[in-house]
Length: 253
Image (cartoon, rainbow, N blue to C red; front, side):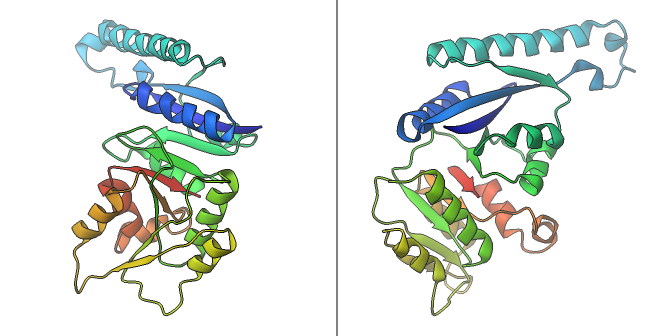
């Protein structure tokens, strides 16, 4: 049995998340491990008069409790029988522990890249699916590649987690990467898949053109950012820019 840990936060699109899980369960036999991360009220500065009276803290706690109730209702709606883990003050160590018995991490990306999300990208030792805008589907997959080790690993993990895909071809999109031989093509060929390499470059194209082409997919595979995170942040930020600009789901292995 394969397990997917799903991280939930107040304000998440529960239909998006649980429809995506149902897809994983139906097509690939995944079992869900849902964790709800509470935002605890006392983290807000207590110097505010209203907080000293306890009023704001009570309101925030009620909002959290209300969303927990919404999660339970969504679980019933989608006939998902499992225990919801509810925790406060969750950091990367708690998530790492939870992933020790799991195969995959899935979460919805908010409109901004918060600290916990970025920390997870640096330390996660399991593949991650980042949901954006619409439920997960594998009907239209593409790969963004510089033909490096990380994207090779990511694609390999993806094909191992999700065998027997209902496709015979996955396009590879590159940015300023005009190699004579693209080794990822050979890896896909060995797995029974064909791949066309579609090259974009800063001489003839804009990054907007590149993102638009990737955005036509329902799921984009990209390499792990963990080891190069700070390098990405202070140089061209290609990997982080993909997370900030794509409006489609992303798999990072």
